[in-house]
Structure formats: structure tokens, C-alpha cells
Amino acid sequence: MLRLALAVGLALAILAACTSDEPGPGPASSSGSADPSASPTSEDGIFKLDHLIFIVQENRSFDHYFGTFPGADGFPMKNGKIDVCIPDPVLHHCARPWHDAELVNKGGPHNWEATATDVNDGKMDGFIRALPKTERWCSIRTSPECRPYVGPNGEPDVMSYHDDRELPNYWTYARQFVLQDHMFAPSDSWTLPSHLYLVSAWSASCSDAYDPMSCVSNVDLRKPGEFHPYGKPPVYAWTDMTYLLEKFGVSWGYYVGPGTCIDPPCPDLPENAEKTPSAKNPLPGFTTVHENKQLGNIQSHDDYLTAARTGTLPSVSWIVPGNHHSEHPASSGTIVDGEAHVTRMINAAMNGPDWDSTAIFVTWDDWGGFYDHVEPPFVDVNGYGIRVPGLVISPYAKQGYIDHQVLSFDAYLKLIEDRFLGGQRLDPATDGRPDPRPTVRENVDILGDLQESFDFDQPPRPPMILDPYP
Image (cartoon, rainbow, N blue to C red; front, side):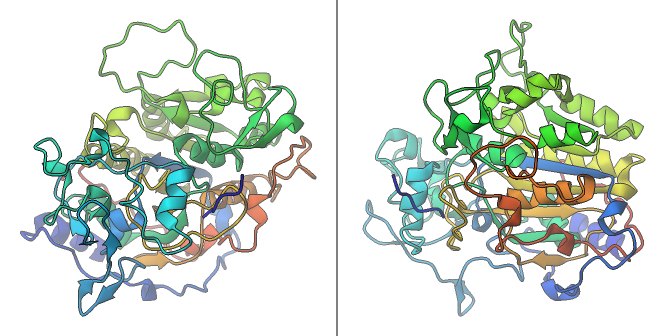
């Protein structure tokens, strides 16, 4: 079936941000503060980075979090106002983006079918039409239960946006480090395919868990046998990044909520334990992880905090949230809880002895049904998906820089490969473990280079410790 794919001045700035009486947007940020064509020129370049940390949250589009960020490719504007009109088939009028002070959102469906409706052949106007007419999606927007999720003129909250009033730390990171405004989800679908791309540059289903050549592209993964539940045998047979990391002797860790049990029987845990579902933790489902006996590399957030404090971070770290801190719409936590979790993870790296050799990347796995105005570029049959926010935080990150390159999670893998693997790609022709993936995603011409976010000639920037709950 064919589908559309779619760290003295810094301290003063932080002090000003913390003491301001105004809740509105902060000082303007411009991509002009650094030369976008500058590339690493010092002898060491990316080899100054011994620790790469990837923090992946849940379900937010770029416009939903940074649509009003100065200098970014945010909402289209006309005469100082947001110039967007999305058809609303329920209220039969234009729905426009609106500022939402609520800390819990509802969002919309986020699978490949919803992507096709939202994108609508590039018109980017189907975000309300994609909402099923059910109570879950507030089909009756005047009901008391739905009022927190509805805008001033009845707009559903897929048309809502937040700014530094709700997300002060994210905006501070964006002002002081690097904001990426053309980061696209790797697939035009939901959480699991995105996390599979995060660690393997592909999403597929396999008829034989021990035969990589039995796999075919799949970004739905809803049927039993297509996805991996904790405690079951592996189902993902194709080659993932940990296979190459193990082959090259590169350390890695994948950090999940401390209440997560990937190998039942599991101990009794309180109902509110911070668990990470298997859709955000697919590595236990990879045959290679089992064969290389590396399940022990999947650890808890507490293990990450210890490693950061003691200077024992692995070369590559992925950090995914538990449910309460995921920022997933309608989850048990709020977007503030999610931001606090991310801030704690960043503070830990900044406070640790490894800071001067670290780069932290923050992104969100998919758009969560929220409006975004930029049509995703086509890379292959599986994506890209709708745009998500991206941040780069490092002692070598350019300051106040907006990176306009086309990026996706494939760029993360490319950086890992260039820094630690001598440029070896997840390429069936050269990686020693062939699979039938349709594209070597790290090599596509459209993909930008994360090295553009760094100035390796600058002195390492000092830590910028933020209050998780400012």
C-alpha cells in the first residue's frame, strides 16, 4: 500500500530569566549569532566528544513547543499575528493556533494514517479532520470534561501551543545553546517505529527473528509478533546500532524508568512506579542484543545519574522517560514534569566530571497529533514524519544558534558512527550483517550534519544548572 511520508554574560542571562516578572517570551534569539557554514576546524573536532547522550521525550510538534520562538521557522506570521487557518469540520470555521496554559494536553492520533490526513498532500491542514469523533478526542468540545482542552473559539488543542511560560527551561536551552527547527520524526508513525529508528535506522517486522533477511518495512507494528513485549523472545532480527558498538568495543547504555522490568517475573511495584513501556525501549526485542549478551546495558535512570556523578558515562547513552515524565498527552504527568526530568538528566551530566567531553541531544519521538506547518521531506517509503523539536547542549555547542538543516534521528546515528565507528554505517553492504532495509538513512543527501551545531575552537562552555521546577 502506498503512503505519503512525509554555560559572566551567560550567568546574567540566566539570572534575568529567573527573576523576570513577565511570563512572556524572552529576548530575541537569532541564528545569525554564529556562522551556519562554519564546520569543525580544530584538530580534534568531534573527537573532543567522548560522551553522546540522546534524551527522547514524547509526542510534541515543533510548532506546538517552539512555534513562537524568535528566529525559528515557526508559525507563519502576517502583520505581527499568526497567519494560519485550519478547516474545522465540527465548528465550520477557521481554527487558529492559540496559547495554552494548561499543562496536560489531549493531542490527536499519531499513526501513519493520521500523518497522511494531517499533511494532506503538503497542505498541512488536516490536523482537526484527523480527530476521530469520539469522547477521547473531545468530539463534543463544549462538554465540561473537554473545556480544559479547547481554545477560546472552540479549537481543539491540536491547534494549541506553549512557550517559555510553560516551558522555561526548554526555551532557556534553546536561547543559550542550539535549537534545531527542521528535525523531523524518522517515520510517519507513532512511538515504537520512531524508537526503532533511534537505535537501528529502520522499522520493520520479521517472519524469522534470527534471519535479518526475513524483515520487511513496517511502521504500523500493531499485530502480535510484529512488536516485542517485555519477557518474550526477540522479534527484531535486523541490524541495530548496538551490534556495531559491540563490534567496535564502544560502551553504551539505554536508560529507562527505575520501575521498569524487562525480564519477568517482576517484583511487586506500586501502581505509580516510573515504568517505561516496551514501545520506548525496543532493544530487548533485538536478536543482536540477546546474542551479544548486552541486556545488562539496559539500565535505570538512577544508574545514569550514578554514572554521570562518578565520571563513568558510556560513550553512547540513550535516555527515555517513564510514563509520568514522558510529556505524552493525557499521561499521568504534565509537560512540566517532563521538562523537570530532562533538566535533571542534563544537570547530572553538567555537574559530573565528563561535562567537558559531552554532547546532549534532546528531541521528541513524534508529533503527537499537534499542528505543524512544515511539510516533511520525502526520504523513503517510511518517512520522514512530521517535524519535532530538537536541542543540542554541550560545552562546544554554538550559543544562541538555530540550526535550519534537515535532520532526523538518522543524524544521531551518523554522529555516533563518525565519532566512534570510523564512519561505518548501518549499511547491509558493509556492516557484516546484511538486512533488506530500503535505505541507508545516514547517507541520504538531504540529511544535515550535527557537527554544524558545534564550535570546537571555542573554550568549553561552563555548566548551566537549571532548577528542574523553576
